[in-house]
Amino acid sequence: SDVVKDGEIGSDYTTTEKKFDGYHFVRMGEFSADKTGQVAEGTKHVVYVYAKNPEKPVEKKGSVDVKYITKDGQVLEDVSSVKDNAPVGEDYTTEEKSFDGYH
Image 1 (cartoon, rainbow, N blue to C red):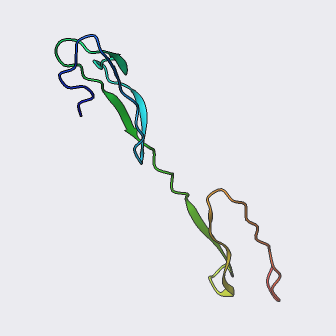
Image 2: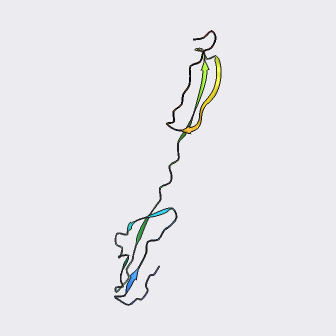
Image 3: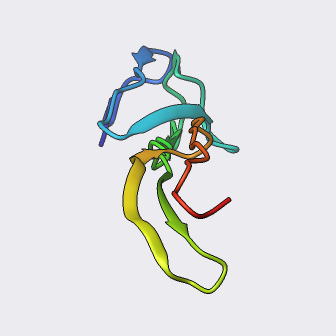
């Protein structure tokens, strides 16, 4: 939008960086006129360059179950949850159990 239109040559102009949701100011455009200055003959373009804000990384989650079986696949104790929907990298602990007639 025009900051000054048909302004008197040599008069001052001022522009300001604005805030936009989801974006942040990066730099002035490569061929941008200064943020503030004096009106000159012709048209000056003041260009503010913005970048989209990075999205928050999605936290990776995982689950751990434990099940106790014999060598041939017979279930001694069915599946139970150790961790459910826990952050990746979180510690967990399981334990060896005793079952009559098995080692």
